[in-house]
Length: 240
Image 1: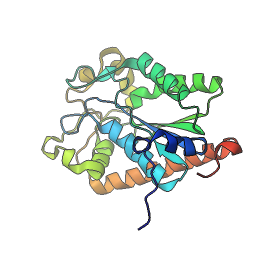
Image 2: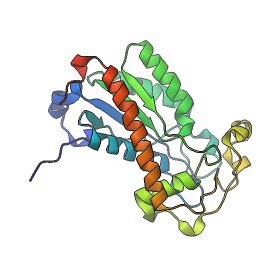
Image 3: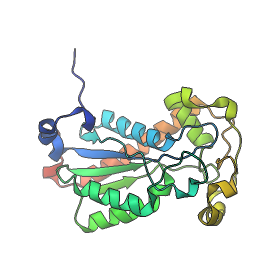
Image 4: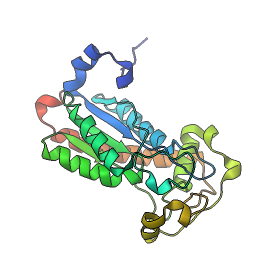
């Protein structure tokens, strides 16, 4: 029986990490713990980011997956019980210090499943690159009128962990494009714009659609990771 390549950092001891770190990219799933409407669990963003990192690691022998970061900048969802946020400054500082601690690796790939982390993530990456560190951030895209707990995320969760979706609680939210909603979201938070916490319409979601979305995201992530990996110094990226 062929041994399975260990690709989760959590499954390795430090000598095993030492053997492969210089030739490996550390993929860090960056998520959040926040409301996702009345039908989805608070862990959606973290589960999404973790799934994409794990797909990448299975396909690329030079990727190791770090334990996920389950908290992010979720202040806009504070009106809903269960949302936990460390704020934008907290996210930025956390990422800067985390990546600084990972210099043993060929590089660090931050895969973000939560749009609210985008601004502090950009600032952290700019600061880290200014220090000469090898870091790349990647976020999945989506329709402008389906920004949160809508058909995209509901379909993805049906594909990843369907039993966690409360199908009897699926209901539409606000379906205006996110660009039109941003001023009100920044001023008053999601609850003032959408009482049920949904920005989109999750009705009609399906696991089949979720699988297609995940496949497309995984391909986009792999392409971005490959381009970046090819640009790393050659002595840092030899195959483990």
